[in-house]
Length: 240
Image (cartoon, rainbow, N blue to C red; front, top):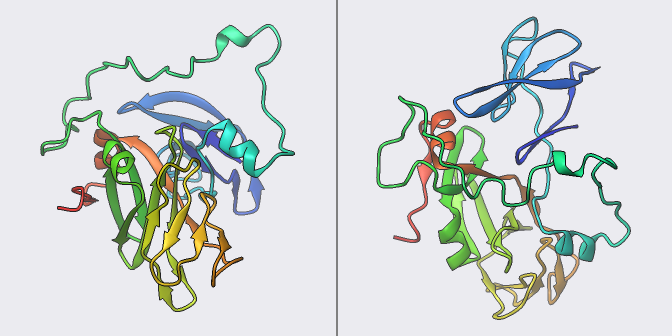
């Protein structure tokens, strides 16, 4: 697997295991080079830009971006990556991006009322994409919506940063979901059966107990970056 800034890609291409290194930044987005062929790859799209594998794409891997507390609550036996002894100061602080004020590259500042560095959650379904402002998701969790032909459920935990998305179809039902108040991590109730669902997308009680929602990959990104690589993206306007 290859992990970079909120994205996880499979590092196997055409049956060949590749290893990557960072070689530069294009429009404030990582460019990587594989050591086996010298091909350059764009981080946000997984596309091979230049080199022998030009035109190939890395396969996305479903991943989580949640707090350690949530992760360990669901996976109590998991290991935790720790800094290499003696190199802890080489790692970025947890709030490394809070003070970023780099200018957005000229020519890719999107039109509209959203600030270029507004944090969004991007969802893709086939050729269709949609952007959801993170602050709106925090205020309205959970959000049920449609991206292409996929009915989605998007939820943010009480920490304001842990986010997950699901396909909200189970059997022949398209579920409408509501959050139980004052519960963290979130617990949801579907309107169709009254079943309760945890933040992992598993029904823990009710008629659908044991059922599991299929994960949809949510990508946290800045609006200008998402728009640059998804020029035809739809946007979520908070239910308006």
